[in-house]
Image 1 (cartoon, rainbow, N blue to C red):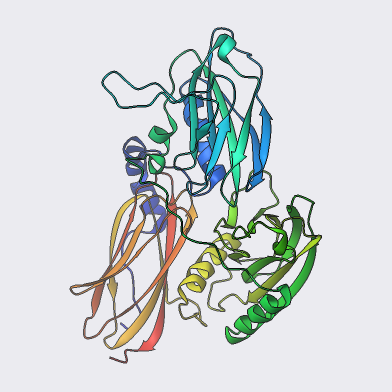
Image 2: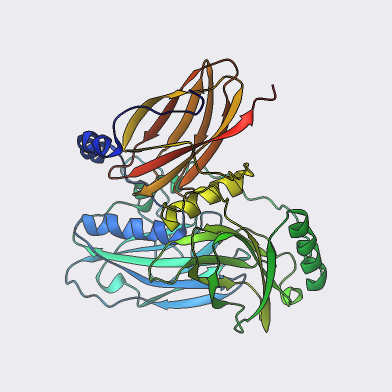
Length: 443
């Protein structure tokens, strides 16, 4: 039989059979922070609230290098409790928090903590400044944020609780730090060059990459270099650049535009975000259907307007029309990011499963190559491993929270059978794998 014919339980039966595994996995899987800053902040707040604390987000602050912002703190609404204060940024962002009476947590008995305190402020480590047990008269009415990085976003969070709360590094394990090496100078960043030259270079690049169309839009920026625009994007894969014309006004070596794109629904997570230290922001996203999105940017350094360039590639014609727009966009994104061949015909087979480990046999036609894609249907992508094993060779794609779809190609050689392996440790999640034949094996 020529196409890969995946055998096994019907998807509905498989979902019921794995239901008890999902319940068990819920007890075994640790909480993991989402990949973006807003997700990390939400994870910290959720953990504090689960411990019985009153926890809130105070504000979100955008700062450029050298800028100082005063942040008023909420009044003491819980008598007899203490304030647990956290300023949270991306882990590579350097900033300082100052205020009367601020101090880092005192060390545990026998520990080596610093109990650091002083008017010079508390410097961020891994993007975190955390202050514990500010009680009574020691509670400040406000704090000040001082940005030392080229630019960055800081989330200010607080909680009040009569009992001690988990520190951030126990909630966001990726923020835990060992010994920190001294900072070293890496030199000045190159000047970005004139806007017209940068636009011409990007247009040439998209022409070589065979974009279907390129749309240019001028967007006004506020005096602090920030701005937002609502876009109606067509189905397909979009590569968006945000370029500012007034970067010459930025301090030397600190020209940096950051941006993100998210649905217009309040609280939605970004499709894509650029927080890199680069003069221009670049974002990639794929949509299975037309959608309205909000694009936000910062770092234009007082530019009266920025240029938004949108290069568009069509969706692969072989993605089934019966799929949801969300799934079509996710799978198209996996193919686009990996520069995989775009299928031009419907898949030859599909299988569906849920949390846990799934093993399914596949039938192959000798001398042919295949494309397999996996897309998350719902839930969270936690520790997902997606592989096809042909003989002694494994073709593997490992995914994370930021990439809810994957793709891989494999060839049969002389083999007539293969094995699909999917491991997903996130409970209450489901996925779908689709297969396409790519033709003869050139080997």
